[in-house]
Image (cartoon, rainbow, N blue to C red; front, top):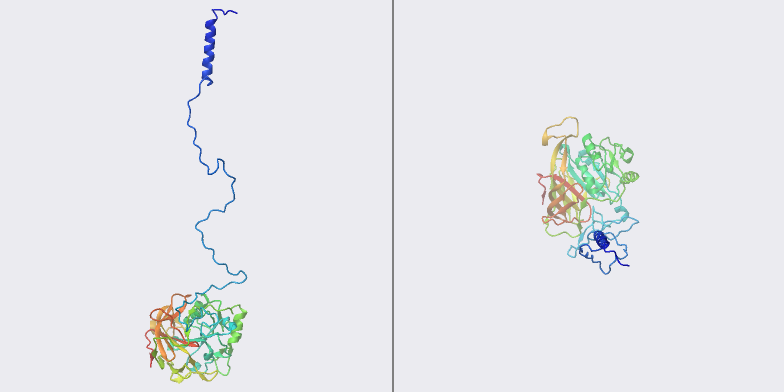
Length: 407
């Protein structure tokens, strides 16, 4: 068929319209190109590997401590002595079979029992009745009111059926039971002293006769107050009934040696000028012990008839403060340091001068007790431990201005 010439322009216009429509819809030309995204590299694979469980992240590894037994508690190990340690030194901290109070090897069952710290009178009447002193591991003599002294006697190694005469506690007894980790036995105390004892960490290691009468006994052949005594085995049973008969953890760091260390000076006697019943210790070379005199007469343990004696005499110089606590009566007799009936506080903390008498010699140094629960140590001028001789000791606590002499 031949096309109609008149329709040709109309057909061209229609074709043009179709072309323009296709361009507008994108079918006739491509949009401007965009950069191809760069792929993030994936190690060893273009697709993520299947995840595997991993431990949680940690910081710098901390070494795991060596486990201890789980059935019973294991004591913390003590340091092993170095090769340069003196082989003659006996250190109870490194040898659990040795008494920390005497340096002697004892039956393990004895070492496990709680020490007893018992208060003993020392006035002129009591001096004629004192018993059990030679059975004590340590006796501490200290000043009280009216210029007298009184004893705190420590019993662990041996028992004694008659210890006394027992009297009331004093301020020093806030500290001595802590040093020895001991149960404190005494007759009573004035209110201010009792309050300080019972309101301290000692409240669960006190057996006061005023509250525990059956644990003590009186010798009725004499009148009170100097007729009160105790059997240490009975007092120990009282402690055990309360769960107190536990192995001691004394804050006392004492070492011992059979041979005397170097640096001593000869000393055949020691004079301690307490105002009432002054003390003299005389060395007996035959027994290797010091014999005690008090008030110019031999000091006799009335339980055995033997003269009181010790292997070591330890003189501890400490600051003494007269307090406002009235020990007798209701009124203070004098003021300040001149109060005659006021309680005396021996400040056995910090440090102070020390003299150790053993083997007919004297060794000088200092005692150190940094705080209430710190070990109580005897050291020389260089800070090295001064060893005691194995056996019993008397500690003589004296004012700093008291002149203790030896000859």
